[in-house]
Image (cartoon, rainbow, N blue to C red):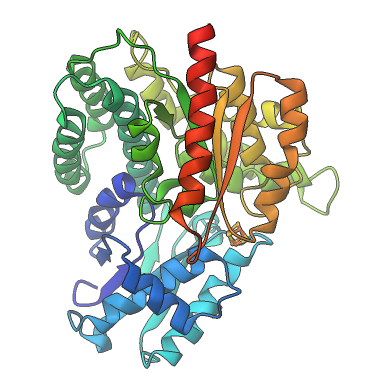
Length: 409
Ligand code: SF4
């Protein structure tokens, strides 16, 4: 399918810098769109009704802008869009995108959804005859996400303390380049070695840790959490204000989606095998994530990611894990885990009007503050029309409390 181009909207720059080669390994020509500018958002607003979620506007706008650019043969171009298949509006992004493409005059461009059902189907699932997903590809995708999560964790930990400005991002770019070659080579043994080498290189970065900086967790809706253009460079803002951003990895979101049958089983008609399949899949994925834990086993600089079941237990302290719409209980679980792990400062981000995440995000703040009086949480809504000043003021206020707390400590 190399003669057919699939356009993929951006979401998380580190992870998505590797996704096109993961697809190329299978012979698919996927182009990950790089950034979202104001014109792309205007295109989104023009072709998607403005009551749609902000991520839908960002994603549709970015794709339409790319199609309008004239760079692609429209008869041999499709668009790839991820779906969560839950009860949330994101499941309907495909319909929104279909309509937006028709309105923009691109009705011949096919929309190929990539969702958890395609992955769960295990064997070969063919999407419109253009795109195959099998277990080897799912495994490759999983390893790519793990590399992305590892680089995200290491770079966020080092950047605020780097002695040579830009050295962390430069090392991240070097490794992204190497990983692109490694992913294409397909050598099984290289996963552990690669992770060990990546951690070793970041251990060698020269850091000045003489000044303690407050850690600030970033949780929320998946697109605005990871996409710097959608969240107005939140991580950079936190670092500029003197903090260290802690952004949980994308793998936990995937496990959250995969675990839904287990949590529903006591209350809904879920078969024994569906629950078992979900447990088995998570167990296997955690075995792969053990490679990151092993690479960090002797590190004093880096904290390895926790097992997924810890996150489930943390969420259950505050909320039922049957909250599975949007980021659902994962959002609460990540906040509890951050607070209990010594990161009481949290920015909870969501698109304006994102109901599910208001319930499991903002809706649990009162309970979190009463359970953990040290919690210093702020919430920020993102929308095409919100002003940056309000968002910045909220971050500054949260940071001033965080700085005060750390000095008192
Ligand atoms: S999680 Fe929120 S922003 Fe995302 S689709 Fe659901 S309602 Fe929209």
